[in-house]
Image 1 (cartoon, helix red, strand yellow):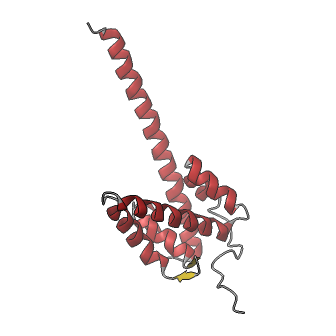
Image 2 (tube, helix red, strand yellow):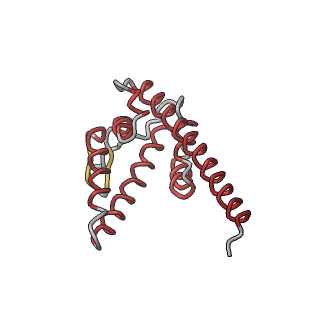
Length: 161
């Protein structure tokens, strides 16, 4: 009934694809970590090596951004709150039905955060954000901007009338 040659070929192809994706994943992880560590060191953030630890790299990204404006609310101390918010969002996303709302809220927050992150170091923040979100190129762009100096695109408080 089963063609063992075809099954073996399918298994070999599957293992090959998994290996290729694993190598790509590791390459992106290394690029992101090097980029974040360099940005953190250039900004004078202590323990820049935390960029190599999953979830702790959120602390580094939050510390690099520092603070941002989210729909008129000023979010400060992002180094502390970004990891807490992301982990909390992941946990709340597991709740049936309303978890979808938490997932959407976390997604919107992360898109705005990524835009603010890139806005500090490049004039192409919109392009980098769109390509990061649609094609998963965040690691490559972080590596590209790792030696850039801040261009003044950080948090700007809303103007008072």
